[in-house]
Image (tube, rainbow, N blue to C red; front, side, top):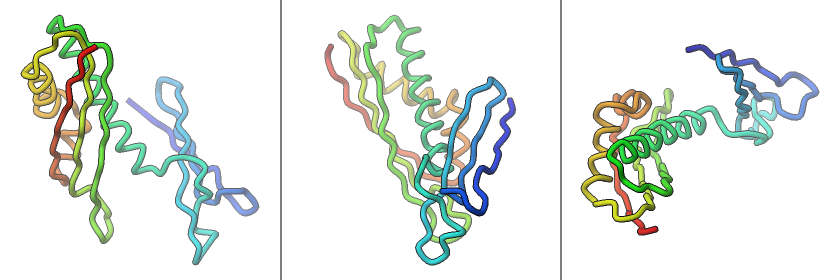
Length: 149
């Protein structure tokens, strides 16, 4: 797997802290820094997600992918799945995630609660590389709601 990240900001551009990531599969992700009121030349223009937001989004995508795949492999009639991630970060550099809570919303027909709970546990204990990696610095908790389609 590879990714190339290129700085797009320079003097005279709208954002001085913008970046474009191009993945090995040819997809592009824009990132930008937060505006800096004290030193505008060190800040972004809020034109794209922050790099740490993309880490969080990737983690959410990784675990949601697992949960859907595990439920489908169990022949459950899953119709929708989303996960909302909320975090706390360290106050000092490096400002790693120290707490992450993932709340899953799963919609389907006659899916047992135990199947959703099992899929989430399997993702977090075995399959989701991103959450397992972030679990080295963050306390990760989960919850879910199961909605009937």
